[in-house]
Length: 67
Image 1 (cartoon, rainbow, N blue to C red):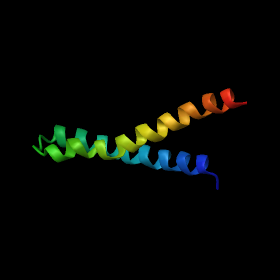
Image 2: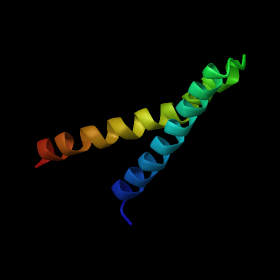
Image 3: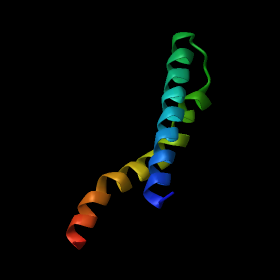
Image 4: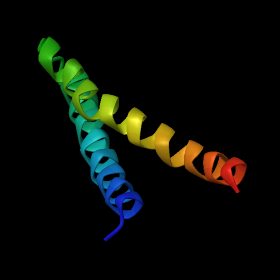
């Protein structure tokens, strides 16, 4: 499997983890649970999600300019 496919797969799994963390944060806010760590839980997948997303976004433009 190519590097781009690996990054795409990692990006998909990170997006699912981020979605679950956001849902957990919303549920905690509705239940009025004073746990700050739940709010920070969404940041764990968000940072690598940003990196992989920027890579996938820029890849077509970089490969087009090299051609």
